[in-house]
Image 1 (cartoon, rainbow, N blue to C red):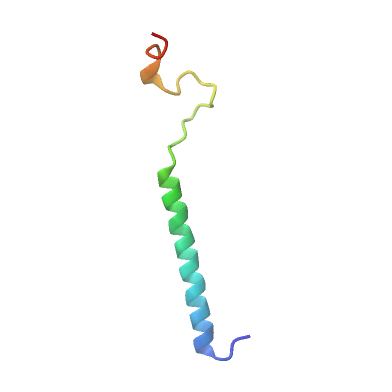
Image 2 (tube, rainbow, N blue to C red):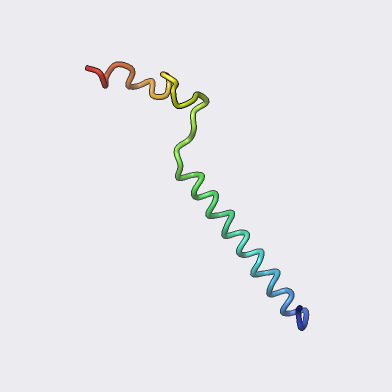
Length: 56
């Protein structure tokens, strides 16, 4: 599979680099998404700043 140690080390390095890039992309995506609240999507406490403002 590998002709010598240099090819093996290069393959390990490339694999590790790809894993690090995937983790960084996953963390960027997690930071870009809004945080989820503890309540579900039917909760009335989802947006407490707009309790009656939207109806008036």
